[in-house]
Image (cartoon, rainbow, N blue to C red; front, side, top):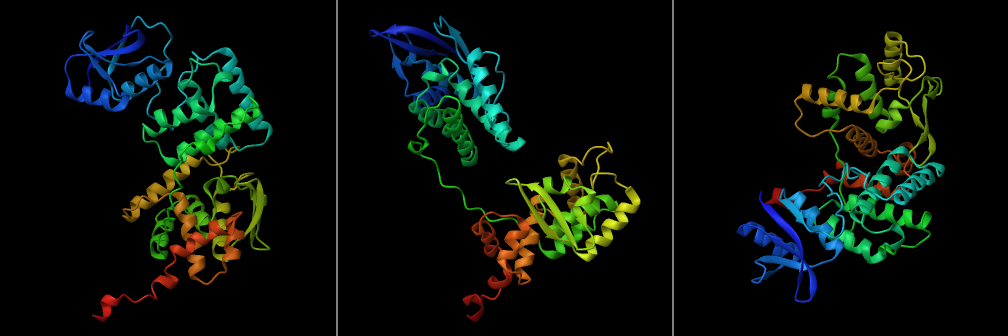
Length: 377
């Protein structure tokens, strides 16, 4: 739906209105009526809504998403730069934000750093906050209210059909920002947020795991994937392993400062230890167990994902396998082998037993014993 729409501020029936004028287009008419509850004026030959800066901002955002060219005339207030429909990179250009807002953003990031939040959490929270502040760029931060947060949730997040997880990230970031920087409580409970989707982990069969782990002839690639599966490691845990973390005599690996800033130990099988020794002889790593192209740096996460992708392609498996599938498969296979859930929880580093219990829903140990009544017909 590509067309041009002229936006004008007009005094109509004694009130300031936003008028949208364009050549007849049934799709655009339906769009402005549905999204903005616009009314038709015979006098001015255009569709209009009551003027507020927020309404104007929302119009520009949604028109940008719909690829509708908006020509703004006689605007009395500056418009915010429209937000792209991309929650993965929502921050955009911040040069138009007031200096005091940028300072508060910096102070918020510094607070997160001082509290030792992980780099990924800091990035997620600051980008989410930037999205919100750009939406209300016309308004001083000190004047933003709980009602603005509700309107943002409805007018931007829900309108663009962003995921529930993105919605929760944004709301949590805003709540924390106002609590720590503005010393103001935002009542997020007033926002109607969906319950988290109960998604079961993806699990591969032992036969599929074997195919993937044996797909690479390169011993380094094979060792990395094998270690993730054999110890149930997260991707970041693997690449942060150092040589000194391997305790071959005790058959253990020390996972240091993993998710939740926790150390833990995981069992190291004799079979994987033999593979690691052969890898060590071939590559002779110095500090990191798996080094990148630069010997002084750990292996790159994105490169590790490529290693897995190439292995899956070689096997002909059509499933969209990720590195985390190997961890899920390890936990499920442990459960099917009769390992107690408490031990699995400790090995995986889960804080709550309920997180580990999800594997009981994908284990075939008990499910396969259920006989369908169809078989007795």
